[in-house]
Image 1 (cartoon, rainbow, N blue to C red):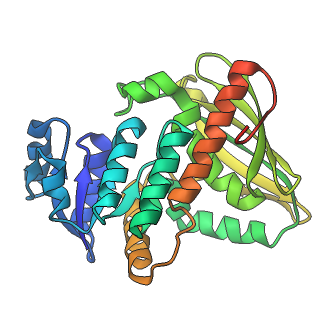
Image 2: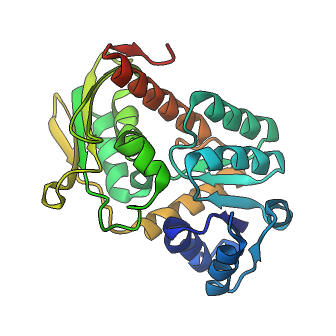
Length: 296
């Protein structure tokens, strides 16, 4: 499968392009970026052309891997789907529900395959954890992701600075708790210091989970942990953040399989849309100070 990468930042280069260039069943065909000079530079590193015209790149590929800010990604995903290209997108797929719905409609109308790269969902440890959770009568769960962007390649990311941990790492939390506990139907939210947020998620199963997210804690306070609990005790997951290229390689494998079989992927754009719906609900709950129904 011939892939084009849309994006020229750290994640586009060090994860998307690097994984595709080394993938045995994928052919990295080119790079597009809003800055053509950067696109050509990234392309030169991987011995592929850099494109100034996204439609020119789309004409030469079967699929696109997108690593761009969500508000830039969404319309380009629509455009690529309309051109018949399979989609490997970043999370969140958009910054509002209307844009996410348009991406879902474009994928449905074109009949292309889609995978959203919720990193942890493409790791063996997570698959084992979710399998164990499915065998347990669960009563609830919790997740905490505390981080500091200072000194990281993402520190200068404008959209992360504007929208904070809720929209950046909130999707990862939901990608774990939703398949374990069921769809989220209501959200309560409280703000902590700086961009820290605390969520109480009510799931359709009748269970509840809590989530704490931050990009602005002291570096020595950083850490990630998730657990669900039920009749078999507590099932803990410490996600792997050190091997994103390996996880992305698995995501490429699964997009290729979905394209070949025509089957839906559990992390497709429809799931990505549902994650956006919960995030938008959480943002409303933060503003209102009230419990908000998802989609309300």
